[in-house]
Amino acid sequence: MSNSKTWFITGASQGLGLTLVKKLLENGYCVSATSRDAVKLAEAVGVDDAKHFLPLAVDLGNADAIDQSVRLTIDTFGKIDVVVNNAGYGMIGIAEQIPGQEIRKIFDVNVIAQILVTKSVLPFMRKQRSGYIINMGSVAGFVGAPGWSVYSATKAAIAAFSEVLALDVREFGIHVTVAEPSGLRTGFLTEHSLANNDIMIEGYEAVKKTQQQYLATNGKQPGDPGKAAEILMELAEKQQPPMHLYLGEDAYKRASAKLASMTTELEEWKSITISADFR
Ligand SMILES: NC(=O)c1ccc[n+]([C@@H]2O[C@H](COP(=O)([O-])OP(=O)(O)OC[C@H]3O[C@@H](n4cnc5c(N)ncnc54)[C@H](OP(=O)(O)O)[C@@H]3O)[C@@H](O)[C@H]2O)c1
Image (cartoon, rainbow, N blue to C red; front, side, top):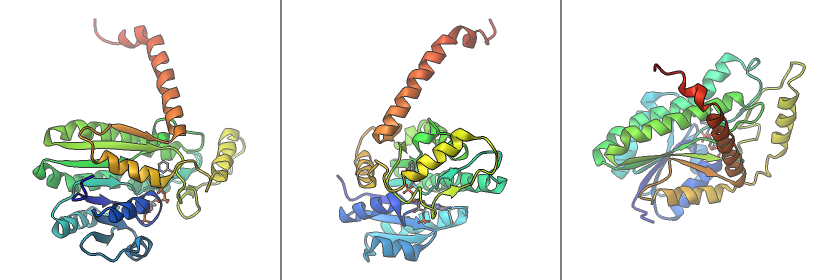
């Protein structure tokens, strides 16, 4: 691995982001990491080494603050090679009951912030004619479970954004991957992170059941954030990293079952599908 690379990671005070920052610093990389709370971030990382580590308080809802943090990173380390748009949170509930402002807020954090960070780093990456952007999606963006409609929509949006971005920036030597884990054992399902909307409406039995099932897996998720972090570090060394990378056996099984059923349905309806064009 070439540890001369500089990484920029959002949402780094806990979970996957924190694990990744620690591993990168242990391996001698330069790391700029953002959090809503830079003191909590610096304490959690526990490394006082200004030559390699730049902890930043950034409000990811503020484009100017993001631009400033990117500029400060370039001023400090001279470049940004790898961006991990990691900050994000989950939301369980039913669409008819989740308040509109909560829906907008999760789109702001899980989607718009990733796009704003990308907008901010691209001019530098284009100039250096290299760069790698890893966007944190989720298997839920491709195969959602009952109760996760709004969260799944944010992660599907980021997958679609990443796919087209990859096409747009390929000519500049910039690569893009959307990483799509299934359950990772982080703070994701805790009260601190998850927006959990209790369902006050009769019915919605499938949602109520999966809501309980998901909450019961907190602390027992099979996904190891340490392994996921190491995989991201390996990806950054690849000449041709993947467009989508599912992480975890559950993610693999769910994605592969959906691909198979989509292919079957696509072929079953092929004659109708193509009959919609002018002849
Ligand atoms: N854990 C899973 O099962 C799983 C599965 C699929 C995808 N993911 C995705 O993986 C990424 C990392 O999550 P994690 O599992 O490490 O969860 P986590 O332990 O809850 O950490 C999430 C990080 O995102 C940031 N964040 C959360 N809410 C935020 C908000 N409202 N505004 C700004 N930043 C916010 C936090 O940053 P600060 O507090 O430092 O600001 C936090 O460090 C997320 O994008 C998540 O959607 C997780």
